[in-house]
Image 1 (cartoon, rainbow, N blue to C red):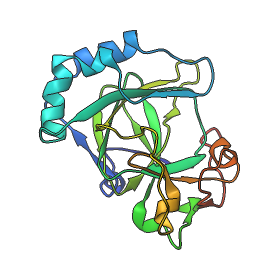
Image 2: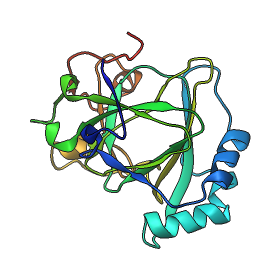
Image 3: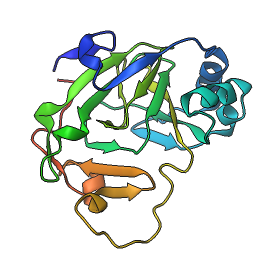
Image 4: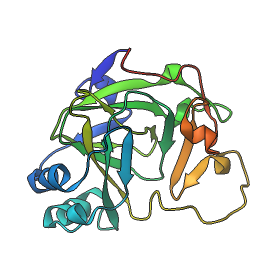
Length: 210
């Protein structure tokens, strides 16, 4: 699978690089105050060690225009696609190590399904903050170095990924709702599908290890 750089023009429909901020305190907290699982991935929507930093507050004012944001993380080891999700807001990512994102576009969804042949891989250098647009489907990062794994900042509008209140689905997109502000399409092979997630990915469950 071809892995593009985020400086490649191919990244433009999916997101952009964010510059001009002192990210050192956030990177330090991400490195020192968040755990690395021995296998698989772990996600925390809001991490106090990062959320309470003055640098995070300054960043949130810009990224979300003064509205409430949550600073969390996704850490671990991964090489597979498994699922794709999207939100009604951009997501911002920053890694302590290089990591890879597998991305598609919301416009690639046809009749509630997305063919994984539409997915592209992008390598994000460590220490570079990126915006992933609301119209970009994404999921857990993939590691570059299996010995190091990845530690990735995840910044979203506050309340995203909290448990979904009970509601009655009115249309096909409603059936994709997996958590608050989280629409998810799972591959049939993914654990999420076996746990009741909407199965919306068709084709190969991509694996960057091959």
